[in-house]
Amino acid sequence: MSELIAPVVDGVVQQAATETGNKSTRGTNEVGKDAFLQLLVCQIQHQDPLQPSTDTEYISQLATFSQLEQLQNLNASYENTQAFSLVGKSVVLKTSKEGEKLSYVSGTVDFINMSGKNVKLSVNGSLYDLNQLYSVIDEQYLLEQGLPSLKQEYSFTYDAKAPTPLNFEVNLGEGDTKASEVAVLLDGKVLDASLYSLEGNVVTIRSEAFADLPNGTYKPAVVFNDPYYTTISDEITVQVINSEATQKPENEDGQNSEEGATEE
Image (cartoon, rainbow, N blue to C red; front, side, top):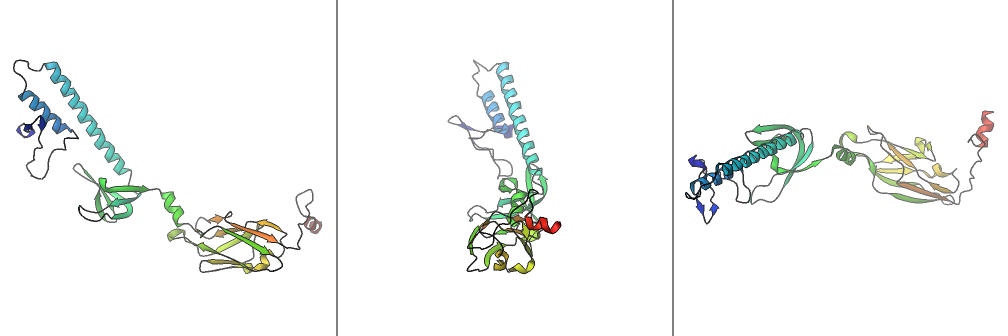
């Protein structure tokens, strides 16, 4: 019990060093169960002999101590549960030491190491304390970051009297979701491969692809050959002007008259 006794100066319990010399009780702003016991022992030692504390007071204090201990155990159990839920997650950890510039390391949590009360995360072959955890990254977010995309939104004007090809840049993606080819849909139809090309990160749609389109606004779609066949259909707008092509009239079945005559 002697190791639980700490000196009191001006009504404040002083920090008591442990046998190792490098560990101490928590600061005065955070009362743990050890500090609570120290307070209780001090109270018993310094009580007024003429007005000693009653059994009821001690029982109440011991009940409070029991509740405190249960809350601490519950908190430790929650931390362990939280740690185990991180296995397989992508995380960012703070790795700087005292006096060093703040730095970070990212990776996937491989396993959890339980050493006494210390919980450590294994990331990239190294162990880190749970309190070094900086952020947890959603897998869907990581997936979206690696998917193919367009560099930006594009808006073109195609003048049928001065036809020119249209060029736009794409991001083919990264890692397992990287694409190597694209397909282009225009006016609901897949363009022939001879009407567009991919060189590096630049897609070129030849002017012949727009030759038969009437005046109007079109939204070409780009389909990548990544594992998810990522399709982008709302980031390119083409305004066709000065076209002599006319919209073919539709019959009652929703087909244009020329197609209907061919089928007959």
